[in-house]
Image 1 (cartoon, one colour):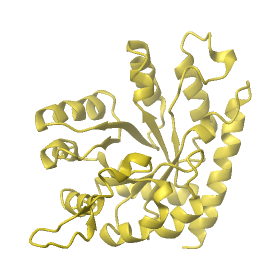
Image 2 (spheres, rainbow, N blue to C red):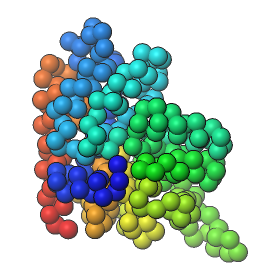
Image 3 (tube, helix red, strand yellow):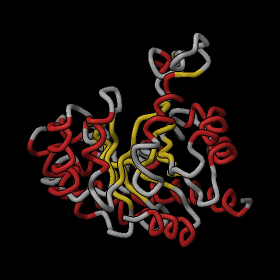
Length: 276
């Protein structure tokens, strides 16, 4: 999916919602537990109920890999079922030496035809470059994450070359450097919604890139704050909500309840977009 196509989806749907399919077999409604293809059936109904309200789906691969072959097959079926109109993200957080990253890229971009993959940048450019070499695909690099442990490394102050002044956070250096490896056409960054006020300074570093923003919903992030500090001229945001939507109900009406919550997000997003 190209940037232009993604921006058009935002305008057409007045939405920048990404629905996270972090599907846990132990948390889906009881009436589906005995279904022979429970995970895919659950995901299918969520997708059918929300596809006109969101512009993207994010599959957290850990929830599927934990189930072995059965989970991997459910992930493949889910990925294939997501409409081509929606940005399809593999939240896999891969990143390794170049040869290995090339295989990760092949698995998710060629074998399962994801549009995007999340990547950990710790090992440097040769671990990220193989993902960026796929035309029409997106590499989503971890920037400033919403977890407590982000302070251990991401928020360390670092010296600039030739300077003794520890004036920059490590994540700022990561954003500056990696933004030069790709373009706003093929590169996004993850910024947690619980770090919303930091988006103002982040936008000074990467004003044009799309940001994938998890942490709205159960993690307590504010959609209003994310929009206030993060929106750019093209929207530039993919706000992910997972548990708040997919587990809105434990009953047989789960898909309808998921739609209701997604509609609330979309309605608020439409208002926020109209103010830009």
